[in-house]
Length: 230
View 1 (tube, one colour):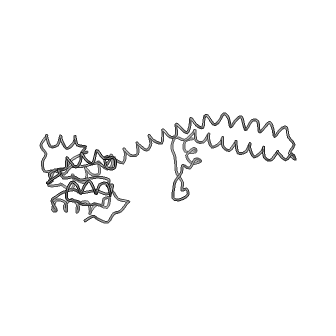
View 2: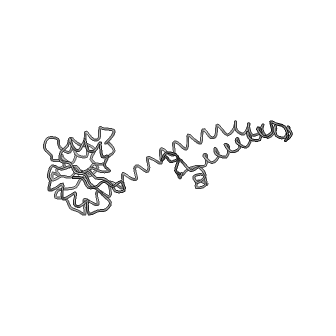
């Protein structure tokens, strides 16, 4: 049975056909406040549960009847929904050929049976930390691409906005303030200058902070981000 799910903790899927081995690992994780666990007993159930739960990590027994752990890992790594979930093999078989096949199937690490508590927790922590850092690097890379694109767009927008602002300034100098067109021209200049200020801020952003937006969404706080970049 799964522990109570907690989004603040890392979810670990335990896959082992041995109830005793599965329970031992589950109890080790249960005593650690950073993790919650879900248990299944065979390969097909692992594949199904992984797609549904999207665990942060899978502890996968190699020697299972029907579909062994290596075959399960190969299926997981071919599926877009589960390919990024790290797999630590739990195995009593540690010969070179088995371990070679395990890593070639997409496994990240392995621990030996019977499981040593200190070793298990250390390997779990290491794999999850690596996954967190990889996600952060990917997000930063994506953000860098977005900011570079935004910088190019802002550069292209700046010139026509400067032209509009300049001509608006000339018009304001030529027409009297009591002219009916005066407030409209002034408004055009003010809004154009405001847009120019926004594009200049966007071009300075290298890091970002977000703020709440409508319907639970979040957007970049341009003022804070531009300030941090400066």
